[in-house]
Image 1 (cartoon, rainbow, N blue to C red):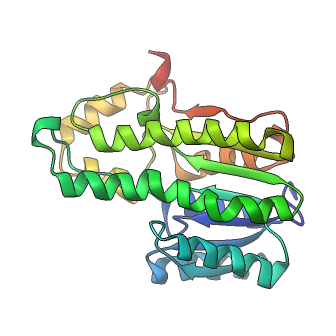
Image 2 (cartoon, helix red, strand yellow; image 1 turned 45 degrees about the vertical axis):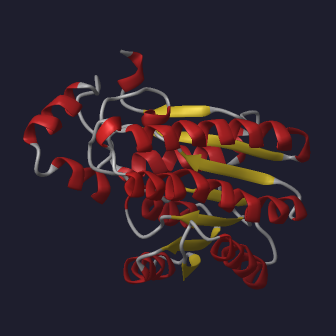
Length: 252
């Protein structure tokens, strides 16, 4: 308990899934949380649960593709608590499966803009604030899709590979400035986005489950606990790491 006591954290994609689990867990561990997502109704509910449990949090709706919205989160952290120590850049989207030659250009642009450019813009706003606060930790959500390829998922895999590259560059740039930057790489996790991908395709569910040697998909809180590890001093000598949390997926 209290591994994040006195810390201030921004979490994007905090309305559901891994982001919501992380917001609740970080707050339970003592962090003051700026939670953000596009779905204000769900995000506000997450914050209400945090406050009801004795935590401290605020919800601010935002679009990760807009630098001004990231700056709004940073400004909120400073206005309310006077610092920023942690950023968990977790928001992301997927897309329908399609081979490259048939891939819709508009969908491609949307996925790259949210999943990759959104992380770049987040760090662009967050890094000066974290440096001003004396250092901290940034966690960017990539995916096992950033480590391995799969047919039909070109935009998602390109974006998630890009997040890992961006994370490594940021880690090098900030290594001697007391800021650590790591990437969380989840495998199949029971989020709404993942469930919507599988619910109408039993064959895909069976195949994807078989790809996880542990024999099941992850729960969001299992991913959030690893994000907590990366956010806390427990990982004080780790930076530039793309950490698979994948039930053995990438071992095969």
